Length: 362
Image (tube, rainbow, N blue to C red; front, side, top):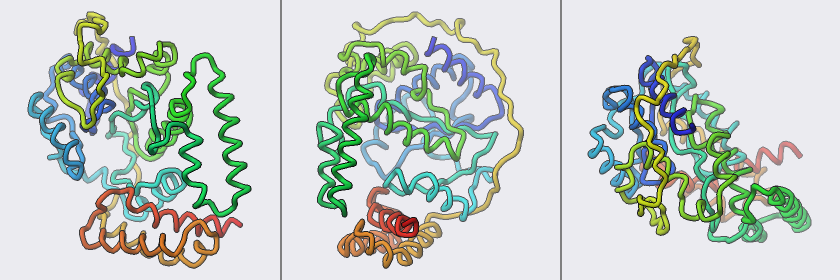
């Protein structure tokens, strides 16, 4: 039912005047979502090259290479469409949204690039982490061990001990649920990480995430652990939507991926005629304020606020002089290149701005 429902939803969108942007990477999550969309295009008999903007990060070379192989096989372009005028975001709004929804919960600095518009949906693999086995987070085998690595950088030892105690109590309570595996990293992804990841994005754009929400969670919370460890749920969805996608490599190994042996997968026998394509899409036409902004302009705003934040941020002990020096180097390098080498490189700058905000609260 889940597969047929989401294929049908995509058919409805493809048959409407709503524009769709789809993230394509070398990863498993976005590929599972892409499988549903490709099957919908087949059912709707539409040309994806003219109806969907496929988005892929050119800075991630292996990701981009795999994305282009997939695009070539299925005959759709990667990243060729420009942002339509009605979706261009105002500079001040973009920076404000980043501070409101990202600064406190996500270190990589991604400034929103489009406004919320009833005529545009953005889709991708958000939410997929809740449906597989997570062995490590930041090189640590448990959430507590991952936090312990931050102990030396925490300004007040007693508060850090209290934080660890609270986290352990929370995880104990959550993993007591019979539908939660005894794996603290899986618990973290299901109950916290995905909420801030997918949930944050949905605050400022119309985001479609088939892998997030109750539909697939009803499956992943009721299967054997081996299904999570072999990414079997993803393999079954791809196999029953667009099985050709099983033949492409991933940006990382997935050595135990069940899709490598299709004969073990469940064939649900979903026919195109079983897809309900009777849905309709409605929109009010009321969009957010549009404008024109460029990354270099947003970066300049970030640099200005960073410098203003330095004095009060240092007083909190949340950042050090070495953090400040690193942040200045990263921001200067990004200004010259007109991009971050990786958005996570901006962490010391974002931490400084956050620390200054904390100082104002106290």
